[in-house]
Image 1 (cartoon, helix red, strand yellow):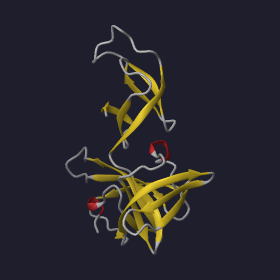
Image 2 (image 1 turned 135 degrees about the vertical axis):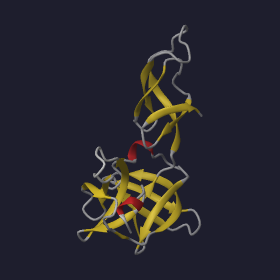
Image 3 (image 1 turned 90 degrees about the vertical axis):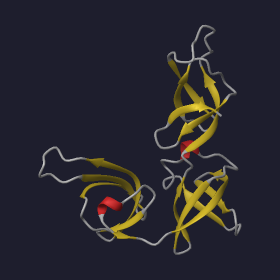
Image 4 (image 1 turned 90 degrees about the horizontal axis):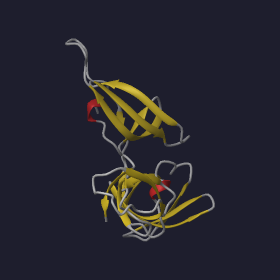
Length: 187
């Protein structure tokens, strides 16, 4: 597989390590003779260390065969989260370290999650692009606030803090982009 085919959520082998792709940025050449670069950010699935490297579009990487299964988050305990396959009811656990980037969006009973499985072990999860969460704390709403006005920080039910429009109040459910961690709309 060529580096220009790398997409978010894929797993590939590099220097004998399995890397889960979390983000790909395309950097266009600044000169005519330059080649397009693909900045790949990810995570080593064995050591959980962050991975970052630029690839030229024609560099080769070896894709890893993965199974994708729909899972539901059951609960979070002291050291990780437990997920259940929605078809086979098989349960999988992942440590908090493996879920570092996703913890701010996970809650008990959450659906729409995809598990990446290889050799009967969950390597990582993919969140839905939008996640609906409840505002638990924020400054009082402003009576004069317009819908395009300023923003204020709001703490959500999972502990994530995002900037929201001034007119929102605690108890409201909002949609958040799980990639950019930004407010999208009311749910």
